[in-house]
Length: 130
Image (cartoon, rainbow, N blue to C red; front, side, top):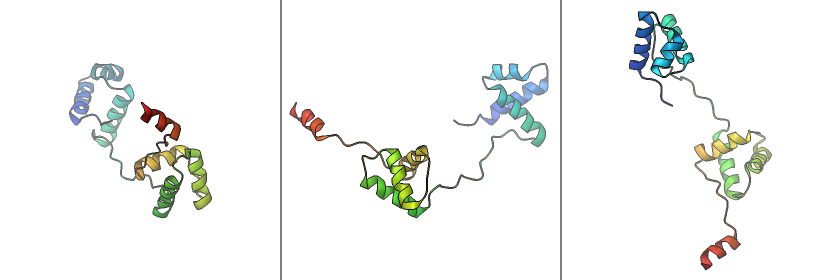
C-alpha cells in the first residue's frame, strides 16, 4: 500500500487547524482511518513533519549465503517435499530451524523457485490419450 500523498496530509492538517471539526469527522470526510489522522496530527505537532515515515533499517536475512545455497540444493533435490519436510532437511544440514512461513518466503522471494508438484504418470497419460 502506498503512503497517502503530502497534499492530502496537508489538507487534513489545514482542516484541523481551522477548528470546529473532530478527528473522527476529519477521517470520515477524507476517507482515512481515525488512527491515521491522530498519528498525523501528533507527528505534525511534535516534529512539524507530515511526510510518511521512512524505513532506515531492513530486517536482516535469516540465512547467510551458504545456507541459502543449501536450501536451494534441498529444494531441487526434493521437488515434491512439503514445506515442513524442507524445513526439517534444512535443520538437519545447517542446525537452523525456521518457521514454515519463512521457508516459503525464502524459497519464493529470495531463491525465485516454485514448488509446483509433479504431475503423476497416470494423469499425464490420461491427458495425452484424448
